[in-house]
Length: 266
Ligand code: PGA
Image (cartoon, rainbow, N blue to C red; front, side, top):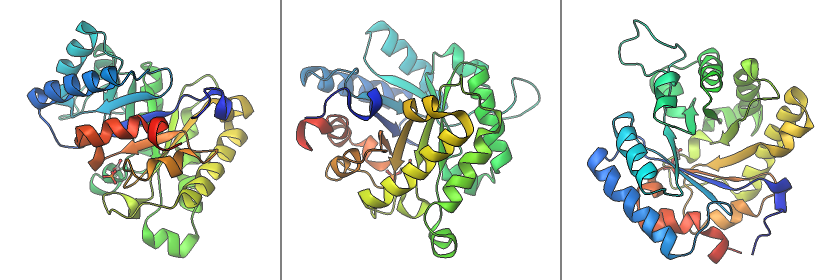
């Protein structure tokens, strides 16, 4: 059993990135069932915070449900525009997400970086925009298999994090997610030791750039083929404070089991 004081009081965060799956009706059913299942199991969000990241079109439905039923579930968007408003067809502003009571927004996911050519500069601008609108950015960093061969495990994620923090001050609340690109959706997760080594290097970047207070309070997540059977190994690492879960977050029992890792993995 994990003590709540471990890891400098950082509350573990299990974040489910639905990607482009589940429409708003499916989202309502999923969120209701997930919330009931966690409640039945006596889960408390003060022990482990759970958050879901549905498509934009689901957010209003999720907001209404969470508010009406006072569900212990956080939510956020999978992306945000770097701009506040204007002629940016297809983009969604941080101001709009704030109106939907989004706590978090995922920024710089590798699929955005690769499929939508998001540069480190864009990731930094989006991070600053989220903070400006009072939304906590979950800044994603991670190396490809090729980067790993060429530069070793932490060089690319460290450089990506440094770039993303350009507009972040020590007063900002942020979350960092280390997601090796080779582990995403591949079924081949990093080992807990690999995740720990990079997460420790990322914490050192936070320490250097934003100071030790921020470094000790900021949650750093691991992402990439996380399942209920491997979450425990990651959560035992001193610098891993949670997980960003893709595929397994779409399976209700599996996602609930990942959120409840303290009950079966310690
Ligand atoms: P995965 O995805 O859990 O399906 O590997 C993780 C992610 O892309 O955030």
